[in-house]
Length: 69
Image (cartoon, rainbow, N blue to C red; front, side, top):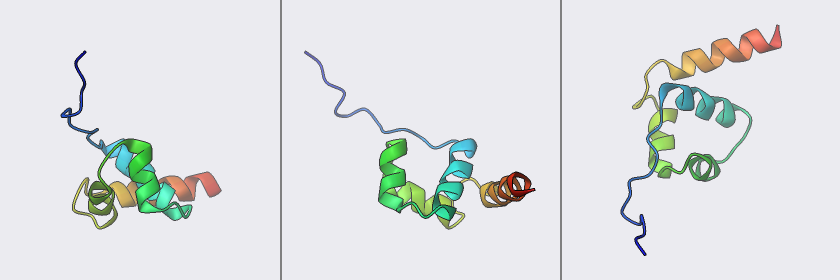
């Protein structure tokens, strides 16, 4: 029986990055977000600090404002 132990974890898309920002705004912990997306917590940190998917924070803010209206 073959296992996928060496299979790389999920790669975050721009849409995922927007969701990460929204989850952070809602008070989620980074390690829980990472587990939710099956990624390393460092990738969540990369999104959080703008090193991955530039513009995702601005899009998350735009969605948050439009949802409140």
